[in-house]
Image (cartoon, rainbow, N blue to C red; front, side, top):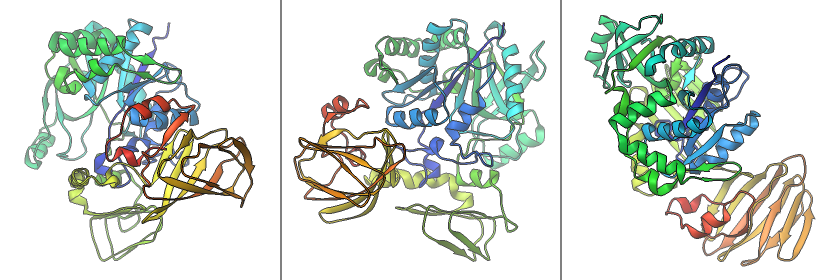
Length: 494
């Protein structure tokens, strides 16, 4: 009988080092970066595809509640039904997240084998990845905990390392873990590479449900107790499983490595050349991208003159770079990043400063994704804002009202079904309507093609928290009307 592997996809990261494309509410795992030619899949979708087909159960995804509709939509676009989409009320690092996943899978299959994967990695050699997983299945007997390590190609200082110990008896290509090494300086990394026997720590794991839970309970029993309570108290609807907030918040925030792998005698490693990258910086993305004869990567409306070994990306407007070497230039609609390639790991410092200043550019991309479609601000000023709204076929915005603003809607393409007070009517292309302050209204696309709307808002306050929802098919009415958002979050609702 074929023993299924249950993929557990961790999707809670924020990817701050790839700002300004990656934002807290739309992080790098949901972006199309490093996708195979012609596929145009996000990193998250690439991860899901990697563990599809024979031998794999449907994936269990565990992520941030803010990303729930993005996760659901990207799975739907692939025609993939997850085992569960589990929502963390707060981030508590990977050890509690994996514990919660293990406790959930235990209810499905007590002997389940878990393949734990970050959602934002690139793996270029898929067949070798599957071969490594097969080796791992042979290595977990006796409660062994497998970590997949990566054959190093250079003395990288941005990764932790694993030193291989003795070969694991009976499993070719698998070794006992001698020790874990924190991110080294350049000299130590070069020395380890020269000595041999050291590999990069990938953060990917394979173990049985019981193997992981038993070791975590031995080492950190309070984490297991908190996660067990969070699963018991979880609230489930047709789409998501929400872990109990009180219990999960009480779990200590530790990674799988710190909590278990560095302290167990059951850790084994399978080194593999997988064409792997964690895309932890713009320089890492430059490394895996196709470069021109001058070593440049040019994306979008980008131009390079007398420029070498650089990454230049434009989301819209022309970006011209002249006479530079080893730089990263990334222009989105609302921000521009310029950084030396060798300093690209430090982009997170700019994000931290934006967060401290309360700047929305660290939180939300210009195009805001919603379960019904998306919207993008075109222009804004004193007492006005103009947005482009796209509504997916068959989707509907909540029935809502505003206390401080009125709105004008103009249909650019498609056919809009509009609720305005007691009226329900249809707007065709080039037709418009006015929605006064305080009037209940909704927008629906009953057609088979996307609906494009230009919305002009005017009033004394235009924040997205000026919404009172009365009906919402996506379950946002109760949670948003009862839970006030923080300052940045107020700019993200619809």
